[in-house]
Image (cartoon, rainbow, N blue to C red; front, side):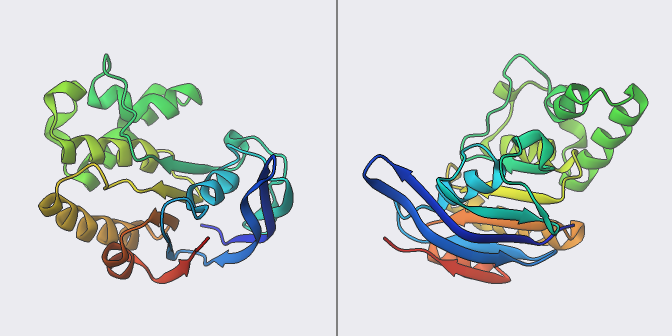
Length: 209
């Protein structure tokens, strides 16, 4: 687990400022929600923390250590995107195991951790299926599983429920909050949905303009 501290973060694209001097803290073990209208910089802030983009100015610390200039794979964060981003030719097991295989984890460790993750998400019976055989909710669980299995310091979630229908979103909100409590990992969650923000967050950070 790790606290995330952002100080004076700016992101300029030519004459356009996507982030203007943003400073905030994301508490160790908390679920913090970034909420605000489209175009206010929520995803840019999340991607800056992940190391997917390099800010123009400012700093990011994770667990007390500066990660300025560090590539994503050195930050020990896991990101869940709005699109499920599953590999269609791989089974659920292979999709969840992918980051462990990329990190050259031992085979027995991979099998154990994937099955533990599947049990947490209640998808043990889906491990041999391909993404095309899954519902939207099941695909979202697999995407979450791929993040969980890495055992990161921080989860970064960019509107992960927005592709689900209204009824399933309500169900997944409750499950996601329970899961975050169970794992106790620092989580930063982006949404423009105020009801979702109020339901999920231990803390809200409102962004505007």
